[in-house]
Amino acid sequence: GGSEIGGNTLLRWYVLHVLMLPFVIVIFMALHFWRVRKDGGISGPL
Image (cartoon, rainbow, N blue to C red; front, side, top):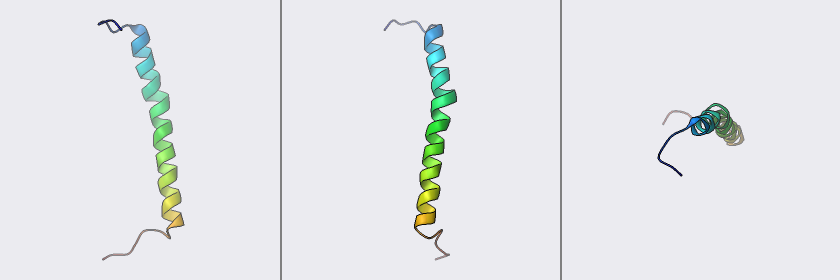
């Protein structure tokens, strides 16, 4: 681990943000939608 940011480091962060982050967001959205349907939808006004 040097103190310089090279091309490989930038490529790794680019791949992380372009591929992995959207994948994780989709997983969390699917989990959320599944829980809303399982629990019977959104509760009414209080």
